[in-house]
View 1: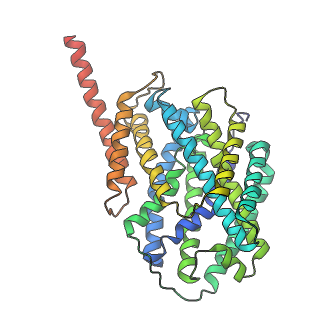
View 2: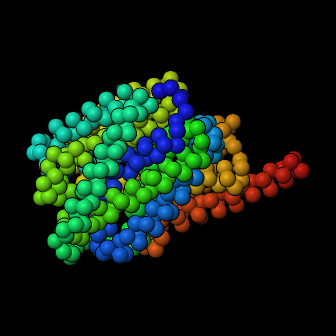
View 3: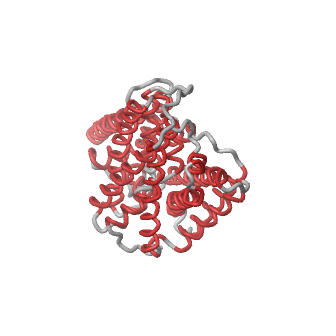
Length: 396
């Protein structure tokens, strides 16, 4: 891919496509047991937290003109970030599979073809999108996003215009868990956003637009999923579309939204692969991620992704926390080192703390407390290291 500068509008368009996602709608259905009022509060609260942090993560890459995993080198060293690049490639291939699987299951609900056939169709379109290239699809992207915008409004109207009445939902979820799920979606894009803001003409405006647009659209998708469960009595969007006479239109929404969102995951997997080895082609590594995700979607059942979301949180929330502390507070740059073992140690402690917090029901979820603790720990450890180094210099 050529490093052409992208406009703020282009970045907003990309993140609108990221937000219009079946995975977001499905995750919104999990919030339904709280009811409309509390569910909406948890969705907004969680997304505000997640998108502020997403903005900070994207701003670093935008200012430094570095991809997400290259940016990680600022905190962890130019070899230390390879660990996170590997983990990021794995989680992005996983996300690619999950997105394709969700799209295939929903498409099957409208046009009854086997899931593996739909997975191949959707995966094939994603691969074509990657090969064509993000910046070579400008006009097509505008048309696709405009169509998605209109079709998503139609879906919203269908769900909320003629509700069958509130349905009782037997599943249980705490407010804190709902907040955490709402944080988890923006969090899943932390290791991705800089892959697109790094080429922005105006990094601040592009990152702010990306974060706000994604946050608004993601909340919209969550509310659609929650509303579908509460008012329509089902979280199966394909069945809602069928009952409302949106057969072909619904199929277009499902396939197109899956392609525009999953493209970002597969393509970013390719960009992260370059951090692992400079000779890897980001385009063809992205194609490989798309193919692997397609195979996974065709073979495995991926109905429950909550465990996957929490795993992403436990790895990348403390990673971004260390990076934010180093970049904005300590103003330390370790990219000239191979490894920053102090930062890697703090990240590991943050990882353990996140897994511990998962066992607790915290009103604001797990991510925010974990990141605040990790940021404070990063600053404290840096102060201790500086004092020790000074004493070594004096007495050494």
